[in-house]
Length: 394
Image 1 (cartoon, rainbow, N blue to C red):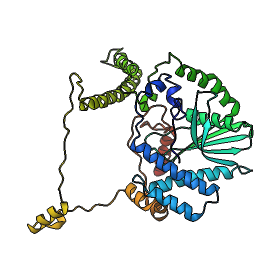
Image 2 (image 1 turned 90 degrees about the vertical axis):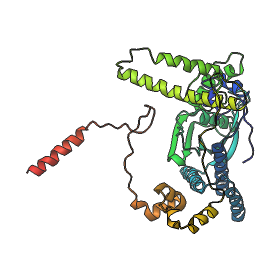
Image 3 (image 1 turned 90 degrees about the horizontal axis):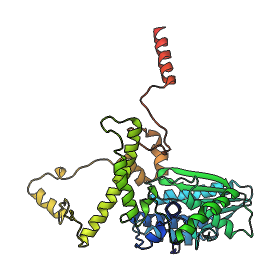
């Protein structure tokens, strides 16, 4: 995968600038640092690209093996990547084979959506061009947040770019989008008509892009601030959350209603994330020698370690300490064993010996796709219990 530049109005940051049009120019003032997680994602994408290229071309096996082994030597490579990228490859193959006529498969295709956003472009992981159907497929390596394909702006902009780039060859009527996120067991799909997508581009993207590139963009803090490079210092975000502190006290706190409870929880969650960002910013400034009134950087709790553990253990054993007292033997967890053995082989060998117990109930927002649980008995269970009691009496 070649190094890629980033457009000011990029597809990957669309969820942010479509909501907060001030974000692009504000973020441009901050360095674009790359996290370890992002680097892992880049490596996984390179493996995806290699495997898909081998599937769609006549790449010699020796060439493929050599390139794959080179990627596996990367310091961030994890054997899990081989399985997750296989999941992505299998999905693309299965989808391509589902069409009556083999589609054209475009891998890591740079697409141009500048008709809607000035200098807008992005790189789609995989495009399937199948007659009147455009299929956009994206691989996500993260496991912290499940990414949904439903009206996903990044995917929709990729689709708009692909429709533009292939307009002379294809007349798309249906647009399908899929996000394959193996590490959370998610494959999310969304379908819309080409007309619906074009309407969104004309009425939403163009307007927001024009505002973002203009002199008076709008600052709109929200969940989309999460990955904004300016989030720690953004004045609008600070003012927004400072106001939230007071809205949470709008009613008598001595006896709250369930409506109040829902509101307080939402506010508290947002305030917590904001406070953590402020603390990170303050710490970095203190470490840089700046004065943050009322705060300072101090050394946290340290840890101890042997300079030479083997030599230290030899001394202890010579002094009569039994070696078995110095070592602790314990089995790996199920998840660790699965990772060492490999998911497929693990399932084949001991999959039938795994039992899954329900997790402890936890609070989640209504947008969470997991079904709600309750301790209130359901009618079907009550009648089943009554029936069982009747059988015992007879």
